[in-house]
Image 1 (tube, rainbow, N blue to C red):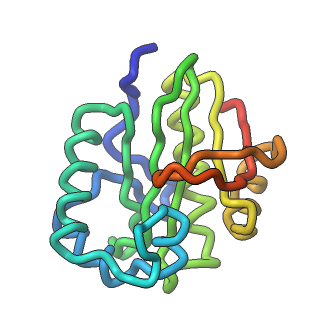
Image 2 (image 1 turned 45 degrees about the vertical axis):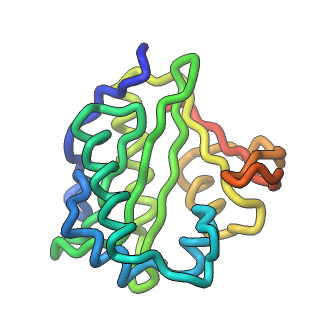
Length: 178
């Protein structure tokens, strides 16, 4: 399998919908993003919200890779009323594997949106003939760890992982066969 993923443009379980983010979603993202999301996604300063201009740039990049089929596909997580509740991504790795991640904005947490999004990603990965899925989760992010475990991921223990700034951080490695 090459670096591109053959995944559907949208996914649904009848409750939530995953589809391509739009530039218009950037405003909802800026309004919904909190320190926890910025911290987990290695924002340069988790206490400083992203600017709308920067969010639009990021969303435009996500739209382009989504349309191209990868190697990373980001989906917007939408509620039954079409509100942006968060996002999730699947990123191609070597040897037929992929990494998954997910984030949910504070008003939508503890309602099952993260678990539903992860379940949809796993089902899509099965259809894409991926051999292994992994989630690298900050060791202190207990809610995300529980979401991965509830979705059939197995905790493979602590690993040293390199952050975007080059520092080594401890993460839990969760693995699942789609």
